Image: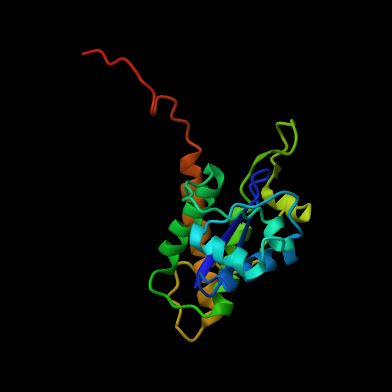
Length: 208
């Protein structure tokens, strides 16, 4: 299984879609599922696919297909740089690093994996962007989730299972445990990134 990562560069909102493989049909399905739930695209999206795969999608649908035009895909004979936009790269790295860390050797069904991805979406889309007001006593913030549902994203209350050994037959608890472990791992990493290091990567004078 593979994960399609969609990122809004304006709001940093993230959408994760599970697909079965890297075939053109699977990628098209992922894009259709995204558009069906999030709405049509006003401009274009960045697709992290090889040039060959993109050509297969265009060939499969046709250059004038609305989906091809909407997603900004272009037929090209030359090689294309796969350097990612910093916002997209950060989203992909964050999702992959912490997901691998909490999944370990666990094998999930498609339904369980989809549930975990939705929970991860909630975590990533709850990241503070700016303060909601200038009032120093107001601790509310604007998050990517506000741009998706016009309010704060919330998960159902549940017991902390991160320190429990969950039997393999209790699959729902296992999925909850994975989601909670992702939150703990990601939040610690996020707080570390907020530390200001003004002198890092800056030329400074060292007195001997």
